[in-house]
Length: 100
Image 1: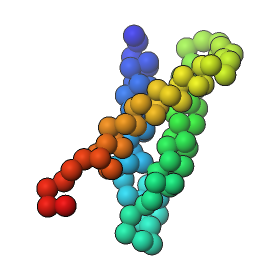
Image 2 (image 1 turned 45 degrees about the vertical axis):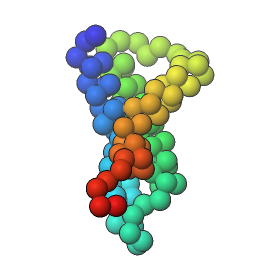
Image 3 (image 1 turned 135 degrees about the vertical axis):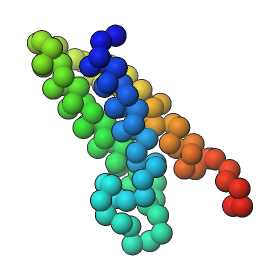
């Protein structure tokens, strides 16, 4: 595994967890009610998936020719991105906090 692949995987892991760790909508706007709901978090997750995909496309273009992919490739990448987001989801919704 080369450096750009490792960097992309780490970046994807961090980006997948950001919607569940940060309370601001799209990391900028403070919600009017106490915290963001799950719909905002899922929308941010989808947006981050496409951002990371764009970064991956740029890195692939710098390394050589961009290979055309079929739908299976994108389905696997979306599934992997959701798996990467699982620690943030557990921390936000399933983790028992003391005094709660």
